[in-house]
Amino acid sequence: MLEIGLVMLQGSRQAHVDAIGRASERMGFEVNIREIRTPDDLLESTLQALILPGGESTTMRKVGGQGGTGVLEQIYRELREKPNFPVLATCAGAILLADPQDGGPPIIKATVDRNAWGRQIDSFLGRVSVNDQDEHVECAFIRAPRFTSAREECTIAKVGDEPVGVRENNLIALTFHPELSTSTIFHEMLLEAAASNGNRVKA
Image (cartoon, rainbow, N blue to C red; front, top):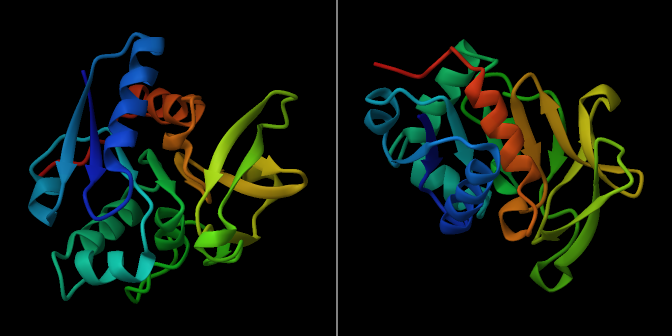
């Protein structure tokens, strides 16, 4: 059974649970979702992958940072020690990986500009191409950030010619909300990486 951690800071967490459920059925995997709220939740587990949902990055830093639960600092430490550990970070989650603001280096090399697509009223459904395939996935961009730099070889998703998803090792960072889509392609990527990942988080 795969154990997937879901960081409980903000975001459409139940939608991620539902998407993982659909993805696991398609792939024939048994999956247990573990809620991650504190550093102990992370360390007292044998996770094979982690989901860092969207939300509002400033609020997420306050709630999960040094003055809050401290879970973000523990996540950053784990990911710097285990750079091949599978993570799916969406919207604000991608911002946190690109700009952790904890005094350490970025978790991913791509840089982002938060809320660059506009305000809440400017949110939209975009046709996302995956790995340059002709088939598109319709995904929600909600006060979405934009990648201001992303290596072409790491880009896995685009809207037109603009990168909206990158993968560095097993770190998948998306500027949109795949959990609100009918497609489970990105959650399947995470499960596939988790199934082959031997570098678990454990105490």
